[in-house]
Amino acid sequence: MLQRKMTRRLTRWKDDPNHKSLIIKGARQVGKTFIVEDFAQHNYARFVRVNFEENPEFAAIFQGTRNAADIYSQLSLYLPGARFDKGTLLFLDEIQSCPDAITALKFLSIDGRCDVIASGSLLGISYKEVSSFPVGYVDHAEMYSLDFEEFLWANGFGESQIEYVKGFCERHEQVPQAVHQRMLDLFRKYIVVGGMPEVVASFVADADFSRVLQLQRDILAEYQNDIAKYAPSAEKAKARACFLSIPKQLARDYKKFTYSLVEPRGSARKYGGSLQWLYDAGIVNFCYKLDAPELPFEGNADNAKFKVYMRDTGLLVAMLEDGSQKDIIEGNLGIYKGAVYENIVADIFAKNGKALYYYEKNNSLEMDFFIRREGAATAVEVKSSQNRKAKSMDSLIANHGVRRGIKLAPGNYGTAGSKVEVMPIYMAMFL
Image (tube, rainbow, N blue to C red; front, side):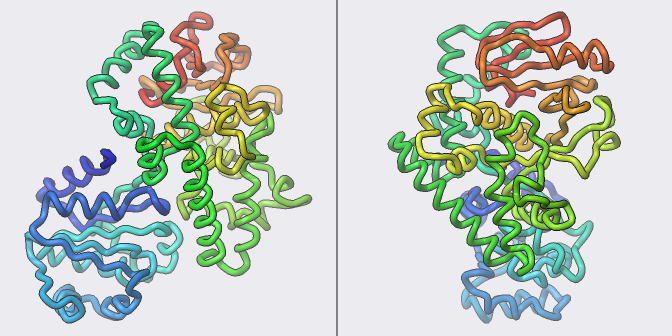
């Protein structure tokens, strides 16, 4: 069974004596249902699951009621023998299909007779349909596909081994070459496999990349089915067009999302809502342009200019032509190589809770990312080759007041000038 960090998050939630109902948000197939069921098995005497997609009739229980006792009484009629007390975890799955149940979480939290977890794949979208969101009465967690550390766990790495590698990052030392090559090999495999639990489990079982690709493309087909099923009628074709344009967007030297690549003379007015739908569905991440490369990032961000990344890089690779997996493993992917490496770093940063920002000036200077590190605005450049030159970084430090930079590349640890560290790209997970 795959080890997930969400288990620890659930344990902290349960151990908090003041915990409320918990909402777990995340895209389809990132493992939300499995992790809740497994957690219930190890921590509760009883587990009651209500899936609003599989059993839409349960939605009637939550319509028009603001009384937890009534909800539990009606659930007992639908589920003979179910008990609702401190030994029970009630799991409201696919809750986006029942907005009234989201509202009812307030009253279930106040009642407190049993623990309640709600989960959904399209919660960012269904929130707009909730008449009264239970602000202050729910706890929140967001779940993603496996991050690189979880991928390492799945491939037999223990936490002590990861801490060993992290030590070289903290001490600013080169990683022993054998360890470096092993980490780089696994990182490239992670780029190709991604973090979708079913895909990772399949890869760990038999290392069959053709099966990996089949599973990934099945997930991509489900994403397109979700667009067709759930996107507003006026947005369906546009959301699909935006989704399919992502590889082409990232293949360019300057990767700011350009609506004309979706459609000639396309505009934010026409496609902005479609892109937001993809974000709300948990399919993409936005990386916003900074007007100035300095803190605070949020105050310096231009929300009208952004790059779009896939939230799972394995799915991005699956959108490319056949043979791309092999090219990545061998370190040769032409115009897409930089895009794929940039996407994986964006994915890692987002899974570590970082908002994504980049900097661009006059289409002549671009820095892939900016992060807050040790209290300073830190430029991060991503390279798919071992070239240690850092021309853009040097310009930022010399002319724009940036105090430090990190260059992530396949090579080992080193420096590129007095203020630029060169780190193995897999060390992005420690930043």
